[in-house]
Amino acid sequence: MRVFIDKKVHEEIMEFYASALSRHITLDETTVLKKIDRLYDALESLGDFAGIYPMARLKSEWVIKGYREFLCEDFHFAFQIYTLDDGESIVRVHDAVHSLLYH
Image (cartoon, rainbow, N blue to C red):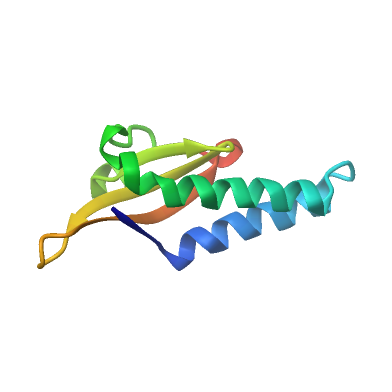
């Protein structure tokens, strides 16, 4: 399945790591860029196995919207599987939150 990532997800990832870089003097930009690359690689591969992930359980907004949840690099991602009019199934990643902020 093709994977589509909402703008909000990109913003959440970048905002978290920008904040982390400013707060943690031992964290360097190279490490952050590698983490971000791994996140996006994992999100792209989500289309291969999206159906195995459970429904969201803790974040009430995600539960109400019927999102599934995927965890990678300490980020929780909310996504849904959609079927387009032509019958193609796609994955759309709607939201993201780091484990430190997840509740």
